[in-house]
Image (cartoon, rainbow, N blue to C red; front, side, top):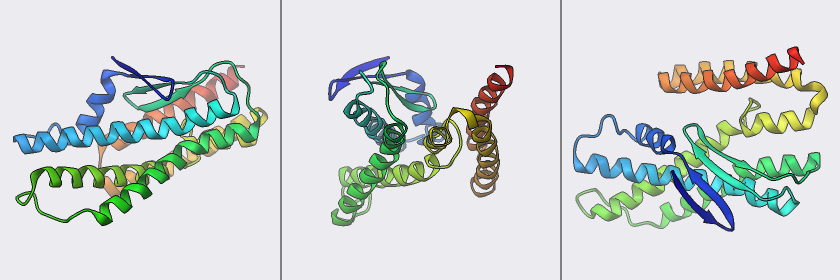
Length: 219
């Protein structure tokens, strides 16, 4: 497990994170050295994007007094965890929104980079080609993930915002909204991408909401 510190925040990266990033980057189809270079660049872009997203949560939480933050990157993405510091409802919503906000800001910055980059083919300049691919992946990932992550479905940021906004007394309503959102989102993704992986992700997200709903019923 990779461990390091950034802005005084401990960060750990599980090997499953790299496995998933390599899979999404086309590792199963890679054959040539050029293919593997693109896979590695994709993995680096995913790593940088998730780190920036989670730093948005972590730095905002620290600013509000949520306690010592730590970031974990795992097979499903990443999570920012905090100490025992308490936050108001408004602060928790702003802290949650800071993740997608950081992703959108990163996408905007790299859009400007892409516009000002020299255009060329792979044959013209291989390093420039890989750099352009890195920029393109960063923009695509951060725009896509920021949009998906704001859907009101647990445990996505949008679902967490809804959960905080409605409060603990309406957690059942949060779960119902989450189920409906995941059903709609899963149908759209399956129709558009035909990806079994996307369906598996939706099912995993649904299992989180289901377990929470069961805990509420039993409690």
